[in-house]
Image (tube, rainbow, N blue to C red; front, top):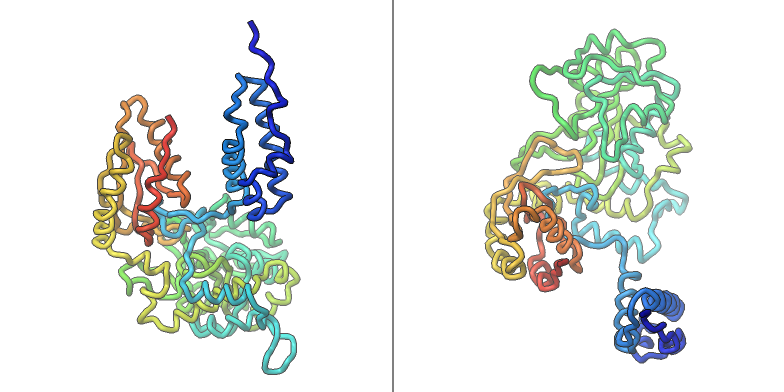
Length: 472
């Protein structure tokens, strides 16, 4: 026997759904057009379900339809760029937005978004100004450079300088410095697109000054040094220091360019971290141009910063591509605010969010784990066990790749049978990702783990644990 055909006449019309009392409130919140579209799609799905399975009159009741409509509207209107808890063990996580901005930068951005600002307007003369002037003085003061300019990221900075200074010319680079950055972007590819010709010198692990000297020709446009910001070569190695490389370049009337990548503006050993080369050191050693990122160790917004000789910076700024790669008022507002924090080095570790996270003590993180463990164990009762464990955070975004930071967090192990452990862990990971503020952890050593180094709001974390839902 076949099931009786569903009575579609019982399914309310779109107009009727729009007149539900609950729907009227949704219209006030989201607007009639969007609510109408979502209601129409919902009713179409109700009809499709009715054709495939037994007709459920409870599913088409006013309370049921109103509730599902509200859920769909909430999902459709929530931001795609959602806030998350970064408990991944990577402080500068590229996929999670890298550096967090300090409060001063946030307020500067808000002002730039809400009000007209003197972006390219000289208030002294009343004439058109240069947007680089907003941060150029600060960058020169902090790096010792003659001039500076800013584009949208460091890859763009490298591309722009190559296209400006080495178009159809050869660029000498050590074979051991031909880096690949995130997303499979490779230095040789950037050079090719910029119109420069790459000339590899030396070997992967050892490059000497004589390798560069022997490769210089009338076709050479510049000598380039690229910092190993996202990997390390150890053992039997040799590389040419900036001072010697710049001296060779200047002897041939060529520019020496240094790409630092991560871009720390201070000596990190002062804060217990490993040594990272800084732009002021490269400038002092004779580099003509230095490029670095704004949103890594510098702790600012995404940007590519170029500092160095005034004549070279002026040539770069005249390149038509500079306009295509320039940054807007929001980036400049944030960058200026962050750079001003560096003028007070004694309080840098407390005011600069990135540095504060990187220098957070393990004892502080372990104390936090002890406070949170009972809440997490209660939320996972019958699902998993929760243990506090010492961990090693990484800095991330290619910065200080070998360094690990003493940290602490939770190791969550499923109570499911061993044969189902893999699936159970994925369900636990998914449940944390589906929370109102998604929690991003990682699976390692047959456990779901949460590194607490970057957790700075305990109350919000604990409050939403009650909303954990696990698929059967």
